[in-house]
Amino acid sequence: DAKTTQPPSMDCAEGRAANLPCNHSTISGNEYVYWYRQIHSQGPQYIIHGLKNNETNEMASLIITEDRKSSTLILPHATLRDTAVYYCIVGDFGNEKLTFGTGTRLTIIP
Amino acid sequence: NAGVTQTPKFRILKIGQSMTLQCTQDMNHNYMYWYRQDPGMGLKLIYYSVGAGITDKGEVPNGYNVSRSTTEDFPLRLELAAPSQTSVYFCASIQWTGREELFFGEGSRLTVL
Image (cartoon, rainbow over all chains, first blue to last red):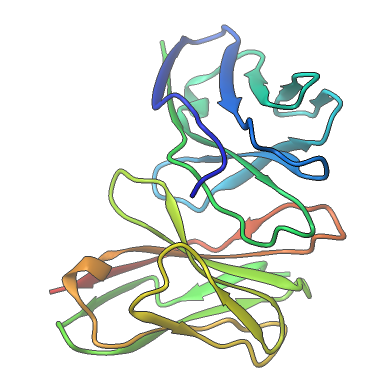
């Protein structure tokens, strides 16, 4: 069973920040939170990951709550090319069984 | 450095036929995975391997077999194909002690008629 819960779909206006939530209430202490996205039928693409602290890279920011039971992926200035399905997964070296949930279908509206 | 390579990209099978989906990675990753994705759905884990000679079942292993004789190769075999196995299959690999990014192949679209 997937260890994360995400809303099935979201819309965001082009140029605005897209905030995608993920619930992972059963996360263990050494599990990381990973975000991937899938555009059309391509293989999923890595976005970002984090353990406890907030993380930022050239694509996005990841905000993890203090209790680590939920996180938010932020795309600061969404473009039409960000339309995709976004997956939040948890895993670590000791949890080789990486399972994906159903993800959030993000649609960027012009 | 080709990353993760899957073959074939497309295949049509008749019910009851068998075939092998090939997956090769050239990044010396220790972990490899096979997922399937049905239309409009998320990815389901079929089998995974933590190293040569070691494989384990994922969420939906029935109807499939795998082997991992080398670090590079992780073939997925379908025995007695059924229409329910019509799907897009993705192979992926990761080196957990490295960047920890899961690298995916381009996918293999299989149709069973």
